[in-house]
Amino acid sequence: MNPIDDAPLTWQKNPHANPHAVSAAVHRLLPDGITDAARAFHAQIPGYEMTPLKRLPQLAARLGLGSIWVKDESKRMHLNAFKALGGSFAIYRFICQRAGRPNLSFAELMSADVRAALGDITFTSATDGNHGKGLAWAAQTLGFPCVIYVHKNTSQARIDAIAAYGAAVRVVDGNYDEAVRQCERDARANGWQVVSDTSWPGYEDIPMWVMQGYTSLLGETQEQFAAQGILKPTHIFLQAGVGAFAAAMIAYYKKLFGADAPLSVVVEPRAAACLYESMRVGDGQPHAVGGDLDTIMAGLACGEPSPLAWQVLWDCADFVVTAPDYVAAKGMRMYGVPLRGDPFVISGESGAVTLGALAFIMQYEGAAALREQLRLDENARVLLINTEGNTDPDYFRNVVWDGVWPVPEAYRRPL
Ligand SMILES: Cc1ncc(COP(=O)(O)O)c(C=O)c1O
Image 1 (cartoon, rainbow, N blue to C red):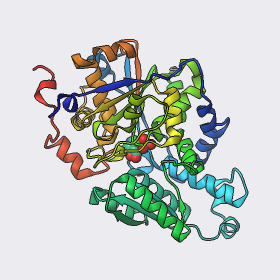
Image 2 (image 1 turned 180 degrees about the vertical axis):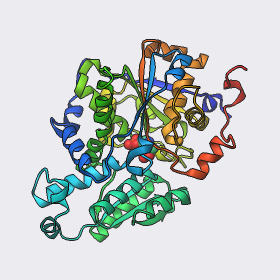
Image 3 (image 1 turned 135 degrees about the vertical axis):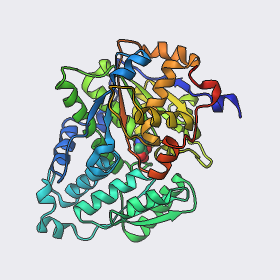
């Protein structure tokens, strides 16, 4: 294996980020009042609760950090991932717009007169798992039919989890990006409404609403920090597929704190590192990577950045890191078997990669320069987001019980 393929980390500093300017892309994505509107909508959904913000003090001390916090999205509405925040808010905004009534309450949205005004709507999207499940749940909760497209490598467990929320699931013989295109073609032919978490030229409103919806989790986090007298984290680690989640989180903090926003580290699978590639090329444009995008981090197996997300990331993300699959597997085991006194967290492949990357940044000699540039030391308050629980339970046990994807010997901690 090429040594670079095997190394625990590669990284790019964003050559363009200007910490002192809050970019126009941030203001476009998050106009005044929108994050409050998203939270107000989510709070009305039956069964809504804030997800926990957990602290890992023992691990922070072991890694030489001030504190580590984990926003645990495995607890989001029993859906095992944060994704439903985006799909539900996008459907909500779509309906408000179509009904010509901004700021409908949840009860109004479900009322007979609004339904009659809307007519029949079928929602659809491609997914690498979690968005499809979140959208299927949102459509079912709001009473609309839903068709979800998955790529050929999607596990049966993920397909079943989507179908359990009443959606029709179609398997596309290609990768995630091909599933996106098939979904778009079929939607045009059938008059369905695409609710995608990624954008493309001419299709930006809905992905923007999806991203706005994601910010509710940071609204909760800031409230939970405030209750403990903490103003904000110093660093935030964000896993990325098309980059919409990372861009939404970064934009939220930029809008709130401007030049004092937390330093951001975006983490991608080595096998699907389109944002890293885009930073490396450095011409300000998003660049795709092709191939099978073969990674255990199913939620992050995307080869084409979302252009809408890219605008924010190019202006504001500080670093992009790539990690091979064993880094995600290590993160899953670290969460699942915590140091004495720390809470345990169930985290899937895409959820855990940021913890694995943080551990390697702190402990791998090859990352000393990155550690320094990031000022990751005993004053750092690091926020991680566990974006998913064990969304593929059998694979989760393969990793955590059977130890598949072990850390290669060269990169293990000395005994
Ligand atoms: C668990 C999980 N984490 C993170 C992401 C990344 O989101 P994005 O594709 O917006 O970068 C996804 C996307 O599906 C996901 O499922």
